[in-house]
Length: 432
Image 1 (tube, rainbow, N blue to C red):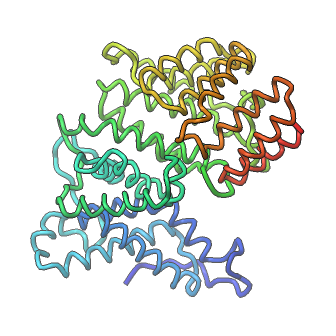
Image 2 (spheres, rainbow, N blue to C red):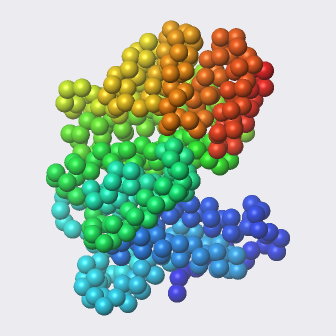
Image 3 (cartoon, helix red, strand yellow):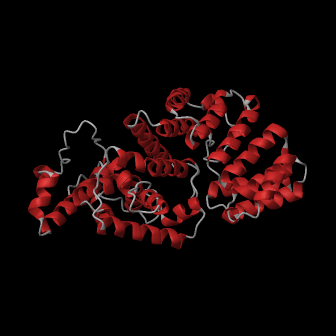
């Protein structure tokens, strides 16, 4: 039986959808804790697909019991313990129970973590194991990212599709096939060593970066920020950089996320509305995180083999913002140059759009508008709300108000995040 630590029965007026409804609590806690639950269970059953199913079973159990018995004192631990108990029961039912039991340790009866190998390189972190497992070379690069965002970031297929500008059905197929491939190929649930680890590092970095981005500017929903995702991505980036001290891009990603995270509290106002970069109170930027970012960027530059990698260039751009105590002091010329280097190193229409923004600040809106117009025919940006948003801003600065308002309205129609949509509609009204 799963452990229960109720704080009391649900109040009589707890209605579905209200703030005190235990079902809302279940869904909120599960959203936050599901990556850890899946990772912890995958370590037992050695199958990420089954682990996700068992985590869902724990969610169903909570939906049945919490409204009746009350929310446990530690909801996350309750869900983890329930999922682990079910995982152990599943292992017991398998024909090869004895061999599996020897692998995972005989203390599973008390739900304690399995004992780790004595290898000094081993990392006691199930989430990191999950990332490296989901980034196995047997999967395509697209499948690796989609699967890890689903399992580790707790994102829906719709959110992942939005982040990648591809149809939702495509992402769903990638995830299903990826889990099936890992199971049929008997991929080990582990952090690889030596050359295998190096080979998977690029995909792991990309996944962590995308998880952070989803938390930093949520693609859908009512909230502009999802801090739990940012914190998890930043934690994993720090672990990776410590694990791979000679890998420049591991340090660079950590630096980039430190810089980005330093601005988090200034990116929304008291009501949760987004605050644009130029309007942010820079005294609210976290100077400790900025210092950590500077140190990590220094390590990235010191370990770089020749030209800086994409994450190092992005971290250098973020550093330009961090070093400017006011918006007006920002070195936009250097930022535009860094974006040009990034576009050459890792070509992307989104990078080109960001470069256009930097050019607009360094040289004016007219040359930048030409760069943006050149991107308007790029298929990947057809439904990307930031393209008309940037174009609207440039038109507004050129005094072309009605055109700017139309662009902001189009951007709002494409935006999936409620807060961002409201901001774009407000800008449209101001420009009209």
